Amino acid sequence: MRKKIILGLGTLLLGGLFWYLFVKPNDYRVTFTSKGIPGTLNQEIKLWANSIGNSKFVEQKNLNNFVHHFNFNDSIHHYDWSILKLNDSMSRIKILVKDIDHSLWNKLCIPFFETDFEKRTKKTIKDCMITIKEHTDNFKVTILGESEIAPKYYAYVSLKSSQKGKALKMMENYSFLNSILVKNGLSLDGQPFIEIKEWFIQSDSISYNFCYPIIKPDTLPEIIGIKFNSLKSQKAIKAIYNGNYITSDRAWYHLLEYAQKKNLLVEEKPIEIFFTNPNMGGDELSWKSEVFMPLKQVTN
Image (cartoon, rainbow, N blue to C red):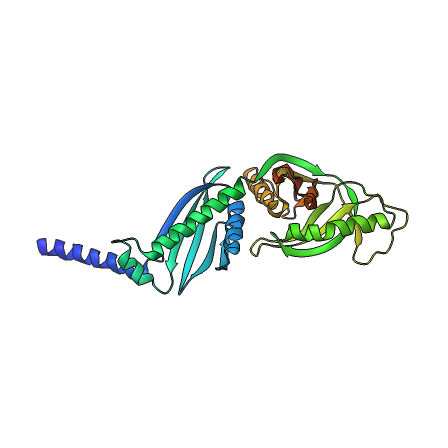
C-alpha cells in the first residue's frame, strides 16, 4: 500500500512538473484592477502599446481578450490580455506573459530567483498601469439615458481612419469645411459633428462623415469634395464626453454597456456633436461633445 501511495504521489508530481514545463501556456501572470470598463481599457492598452514602439498587435478575440507581442533585445514576449468587468467603473486585467524563445528556461528559474524576464515584465506592466491611470483621469463620460437626435441639414466630407486617428482627420478638415461653406454663401446652423457609417470594432477602424450643419438654401452650390445630406430625427441613448477628442470613442463603449444593461437594441453607428474647436487647445477636460448611439427601429 505504501509503495502504491508513493508511486501515485510520484506520478502526480511528474505529471504536474511536465504540465508546468511543457504545457502551461505562460511563464508569468500579472493581475491588477483599474478604473474603466473593458472597451475603454481595450483602447487605452492598445494606445499605450502602440506608443512604446516595440510592440505588434497580433489578434483580438473580442473586446475583453487580445494579444500583443513585444520585442526585447533577442526575445519576443507574448502578452495575452484578459479584461473582466467588476462593476460599472472598475475592471480586473489579467496578463499571461510568455517569452516565446526562452520559455523553458524561465519556468526552470522563476521559482528560485527573480529573472531578467520577470523584472522586464514587472516594469512593462507598471508602465502600462501608469499610462492607463493618466488616460482615465483625463476624460469623463456621463450617461444621460434615452434621448433623441435632432434633425439637421448638413454639408460633409467622407473620411476613413483608425478610431484614434479620428481627431486628427477632424482637425485637418475643420477650417477647410468651415471656410469653404461661408465662402460659398452658406449659413452655418450649429456645431460640427461626425456620423459613423461603419465601425469595425475588431480592427478599431471607422468610416464616417465629418459634417457641418447649414441652413438649406434654395440652390446648392457645387463644391468639389463636399456633399450634402439630411440627418433625420431618431431615438437614441446619449452621453456627455469631456476630454481630448482623440479618446472620445470611449463614450461609445460606455453607451454600448448602458444599452446592454438596459436591454436596448442599438445601431453601432454613433453620432458625436463637438462643442469645442480642438485647434484652440485649452484644458481638455473642458472640451465637450454630445455622443448619441441610435436605437434600432422596431418594426411590427
